[in-house]
Length: 141
Image (tube, rainbow, N blue to C red; front, side):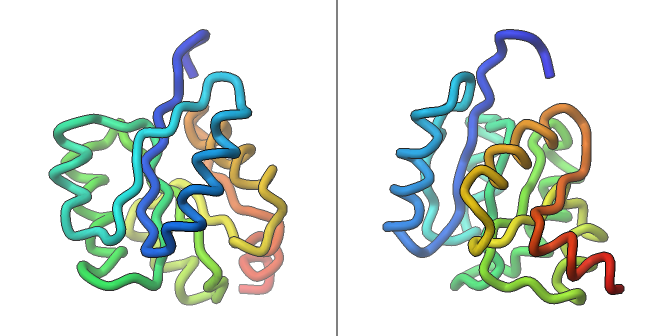
C-alpha cells in the first residue's frame, strides 16, 4: 500500500442495513473511505470502470449477475481493483470458486467486524486474506 493513500471501498450487497453498518464502521478507520453501495452486481463493472475503487466487498447471494463471473470480469478488466467476498455463506466450494475467479479475500459476515478491516488492509498490501471462519473451512479442504 502506498503511504497516506486513502483506500476506497465499494460494497455490493442487497442488504442496505448491512451496507450502512459497513459505511459507519469504515468512517471510524483511518485511511478507509466509503465509496458507495450497490444492491446487486449488475452495474458493478461499469461502476468500477468509472470510479476505480481499491476494494469491492461482494456478497455471494444476491439477485442479478453471478458474483463469480463478475469477479472474473473485474480481474481481467480492472486489475487494480481487488475483490473481497463478504458473505454469510462459508462453504469450501464457494471459497474455492471465489479464489479461482480472482478474489483476493473471503470473510464471513459472522466474523468480528475487525476481520473485514484487516482483510481490506491486507488485500491492498497484496496479500490474499481469509477471515477466521473462512480459514477454518479452507484448512479442512
